[in-house]
Structure formats: C-alpha cells, structure tokens
Amino acid sequence: MNGGEGEADFVEVEVIDEGDFPIGLDELEPDDAAQAAEPPRRHATVAIVGYPNVGKSSLINRLTQSKEAVVHERAGVTRDRKALHTDWNGVDLTFIDTGGVDLAEDDDMARQIRFQAETAIELADIVMLVVDGRAGFRPGDDDLARILRNGRKPIVVAVNKIDSAKDIPNAAEFQRLGMGDPVPVSAAQGLGTGDLLDRVVELAPETTAAVEDDAIHLAVLGRPNVGKSSIVNAITGEQRVIVSPVSGTTRDSIDTRLDVDGRPVVLIDTAGLRRRSKQADELEYFASLRSQLAAERADVALVVCDVTDGITSEDLRIAELAMKSGCATLVVLNKWDLPHEELDLKHERARIARKLRLRPKIVTASAVKGRNVPKLLHEAIDLADRAAQRIPTKELNKFLNDVQGLRQPPTVRGKRLKMYYMTQFEESPPRFAIQVNSRRQIARDYAYFVENQLRERYDLDGVPLIIDFKASKGRYDD
Image (tube, rainbow, N blue to C red; front, side, top):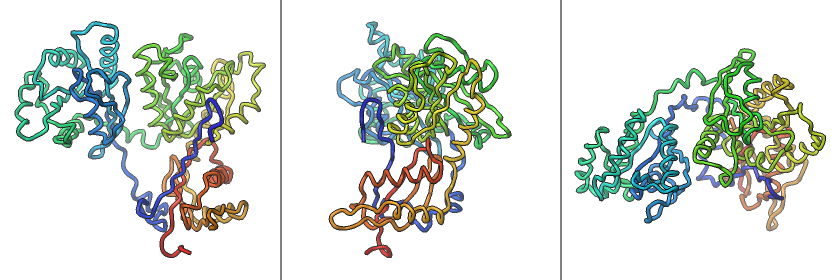
C-alpha cells in the first residue's frame, strides 16, 4: 500500500482469535463500556540518568516490560533518547532514557550527552538516578547527585545490579548521596522493580486533570516556522505564546485554556518537528519529544503546513505521528495570504486522500489576516465530537449488511468470507469488532474497503479507526 515518499499506510486492522478478545461481542454494548470507564489518571514523566554502563537502558526495559531501549555491555551505547510508557497502580508513567554522564570527560560527545541529561531533568517531574550496586559508590555518582540537587526535582536513587538477596546490603552505602533511602533493584532479574515503581508513584504529582476532564485537547503540530504559534494566538486573540520568525522559538508544549460556545478547550502549542537527522541540537530533540508527548494527550491534532511549500513528505510524517497517537487530524494550510500561485488545492486534497488512510480534511487559513481561524477551531471541535461518538450496534449491523451487498466478500481457498456481527466498544479513537466465519478469508484490500465505507457512512474522515476481525466459534460456525 506504500506508493512513494511520504506515503503512509494508516488503516489499523487486527485479526484476533476468540481467546485474544477481551469480552464477548454480545457484551460490548455502550452502557457496559460507560460503566467500565476509568476515572482520570495521574501522570508523571521520569528522567533516567546515571554514570555510563550502570544499566539504565536495561532497567527502563524491565520497568516498561519492553526491549525498545538499546542495551549493550559496552558503555555509552545510549545516545539517541527514547520515551517509553507504562503504568503502575493507576498512574501513567513516561520514562526518558538518557546517555551515561561522566563529568570527568570533556569531549564534544560527552558535552552533548551531559546537555541532554540536564534537559531531560528539566522536562521531567521525577528524576531516577541509577547507580551500580556491584561497582559500589564512585565519585561520578556524587558529581551527578550535586547536579540533581540543584534541579529541585523529586529524586529516586535506584541501586541496580542487586541480583540476589545477599547483595541488598550493598545499597546502603549510597545513603551518603543524601537523597533518601536508595532502592535496591535488579534489571537483569527483576528483583525490587515493584518497590522502585511504588517509590516513583509516591512522588508523582497530584494532577488537577479532573478540571479538564471534559475539555477537548487540540495539539498544534507542524514543521518549524510554519506559523503554529501564530495560529494559536489568532485563535485565542491574545499573545499567549511567543511568536517569532526565527525557527524553533517554541521549546516546550504550552497549554492555553479556552471556552468556545460553552465548550472547554485546551489548545496545546508545540515545538517544530523535523526528522532526527536534521535536528540541530539536543535541545531541539527534546522539543520534538515534548511535541510527541503532546500528541499523545490530545484529541485532535492540527497539522499546520506552509502554503508556500505545499504539503510536504515531512507534513505527512507528522500526520502519521498524530494518527499513531490516536489523534483525529485536521490539516491546516497556513499563510494563505502569501503568494501561492503554484499550489493546486484540489490536487493537494486528492493527494492527502490518496496518501493518508484517515483522509483528513484540509482547511486554508491565514493567522496574520485571521482568515478561517474561527472555522478552523469549530472544525476541530466537531472532529473531536465525531471521534468520540458511539454508533449503535443495530445501526452497525445494518451497515455490515449494506457493505456486503455493495461488494461481495472475497473467496479464499474456495471459502467465502462471511461477516456476521459488528459492534463498537471504544471511542476516541473509535474501535470496532466484526465477527467473521474465518480469519483466513480476510483480504487486506477488503478490510480497507470496509474501513473506507465506514468513514463515508458516518463522516469519519480524519479520524483514526481500528477494526478487529474476530474469528467466530460456536453458534456462527458453518
């Protein structure tokens, strides 16, 4: 399905067995889902720092139950940072892995790694200082501790490589860091990880997210210098954020609360996003990371493009990031007041529909002149409402019958695909389940056909959709 530079294959289709499905299809009714809804959750961002080769990446992999952070016995492997997510006792946690910091080193690479660690500390709610319990206390640990104390952030000392109970007393010598009781832990064996996560959760900030529980979160994303902050200012009518013609002015995500016709809205201005190979410095990397985190907490992403450039492959990549974060997406062609004779809007809309499976709408705007700014905001709110809608099961089953009448399901190995039952069990983004006679009969192009018909029937362009095909067992079997 990939047809060239910038093209993204967006439809998310899952084929699952009966045992993989969390609940029977007949039980997936709206009232049940509403009763099972969770209250707003706390969240904390945790920066993982430490001397080289103390096992930071191994520990972050253990805590998040993943293998995404690069692990190697050679010191200094981690240079490109990565944010990994997990949850513990009802608190969502984002861990930021950083390179090993040795203040005694003063070459260019060491300075860059030190800078990234300091920036991660600045962005984090909590800092986890990882030390090596096998090597014991080292001067480098004390040097790092002094930096952390100046940061005025809650600190957890994790004494790694405590691989057996007899090694636990080795953690006591790190009391001298003056950062409270160190937590003995083993990234290799998993010992003490629960206690470590408990300590992190204790230090997690108490959020006031309940105030914003019903608010629609709109993240303004885009390449540097396309006018994102100007769009935010035009919407709010105030100079709430810095606006400058210099690329990369916004280094952090800035939230602005609005009331739009009685609807609470949180507008999130973000730093410019560009490919890592083109990121000029570590500060820009973390600005980019903040933008990605902003997308993950947003309902709708406004992907701002510069009309003088048209919609670039990088703009499409940013739209993909938003989709993968579960955001509904609206493409904004900003700077419409500038000359753009070479831009064919009809062509751009066809290109977007062809290359992005979620087929977002394009809205032209001028932040400077105020053109279409009110329309942009109302389009975004309407898109959030459509992403949050619940389609009745009765209506979905009528849709399923119509789809099969419009285009007959495929035959594979002499057996035709049959779709029996459809229901929706999640929203924002919408997630649907379709019960079929056999997973082997599902053809990818037919799954895309069903997805596109669903968009067309219920006006879901710009909304990421998830369709689970569940192989039937029991009453529907042939």
